[in-house]
Amino acid sequence: MDEQENLDQMQKLIDELHREREEFKAGGGKQRIEKQHEKGKLTARERIDYLVDEGSFREMNPFTRHRCTDFGMENKRPAGDGVVTGTARIDSRQVYLMAQDFTVMGGSLGEMHAEKIVAVQTKALENGRPFIQINDSGGARIQEGIHSLNGYGKIFKNNTFASGVIPQITCIMGPCAGGAVYSPAITDIIFMVEGTSNMFLTGPKVIKEVTGEEVTVEKLGGAVTHARITGTADISFASERECLDNVKKLLRFLPDNYQKKPPREKVEDPVDRPTEEILSVVPTDPKLAFDMREVIKPVLDERKFFELKPDFAGNCIIGFGRLAGHPVGIVGNQPKKLAGCLDIDSADKIARFVRLCDSFNIPLINFVDVPGFLPGVGQEHGGVIRHGAKMLFAYSEAKVPKISLIVRKSYGGAFVAMCSRDMGYDSVMAYPTAEIAVMGARGAVNIIHSSEINKAEDPDRERQEKIDQFRERFAKPYRAAEDGLVDQVINPAETRRVLVETLEMVINKDQHRPGKKHGNIPL
Image: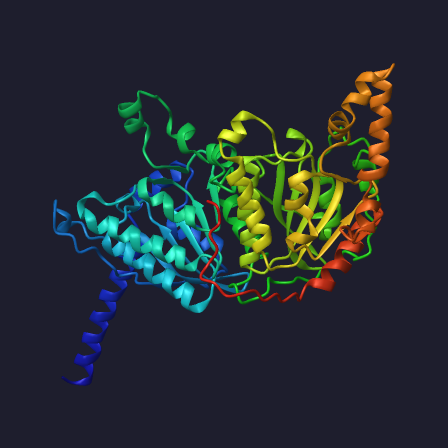
């Protein structure tokens, strides 16, 4: 073969390569892409392009095709097999990601589709980089039978191996049904899009057939349902672009892996900026409600708070912020709902968040105003003991710096969970408004002094005097400070400065414990 023949042959091979590339980049074709857009949805490649730094995406295994020869599938072998995988940069940080392509066989998962996801998961784990998955799939590919189910098993296993090692973020941007829901459920964070994304094990038709109940897809497993009722989703968004924008924001708080410190940013907000607005927010009367967010936000850098699960278990608040540039995890009781009591849902919400922060070396700061665990037969029969124990376990297990600020009430077992020094907190501080006791003054007086009150000429006056005496003797923060259970009582106007100084004292905490396989958290 002479030089010209060789060049001609090489050009034919290159032309073939271009045709193959055009095929996998075309997805399911113009008509299906238009249908995707009509639903208000981006395509898999459009989502990736919007999310990552321009020109940074490097695709993995783009030429993959399925190997199924049943049910006429041998004539339907699109390049890429319905999922786009690869690595890219977001704000100059390397990540690995996958995006299912609903325009190609409905994004259904078969053997090779799963192998592509497993391969990119493995690369993320081997290289210690965050993994982002964008789910938009009709579910298991029926034609491939058991190979589809086996593929899910491999993905679930990799999700589990990566848990606590690298951050895993899921964006549900279409259907996610049946066994497919368990991969997102294992990951650290789930975002959903209102009106277009859904998650459920069994669909409306099956439910109607089995139970007779009629329900829409949106009500059964839509974004709002999972953000407000089940707590499966961390946040629901109005659009896909808003969802992807928040993935970028979230990544700024998370390290690449468990061996790294979370990324510190430079901030212009002065460390000693006064927080005088808190003085007018916190009522001195422990029975009055207020919004704990109005205490949290003024303390954080630039008053920015990235809240998670804002619509679920509203009696507590969780999320990320920064202090002097350091990412911190925020946990707060919310007096505006259920008086800030802890219950089954709030205990689960807090426990999972605490474990997330501990996995990735993010210090925890608690803003405490909690009268106890919510009483009631429903709570007791629902397993509040078991659920509350998850929270206690998570806090005790956490090795990251833990700081608590008692804003007002901290009673009983809830005090132990949220701010007890014996739970391993590095610093516990309190406002002058703080009340720390086994229970509230009124309840305690009604038990301790019931006979005296009943015998008094004026029972109401006698009760109030006893309540005032109890508060003066037992409930004030200075009593706890005398016994070393509270480190300092602070002026609310100095909250930001004191928290930053305290965080700097413990930021390099290194705690060693006896080796073990793992604990047995009361799930």
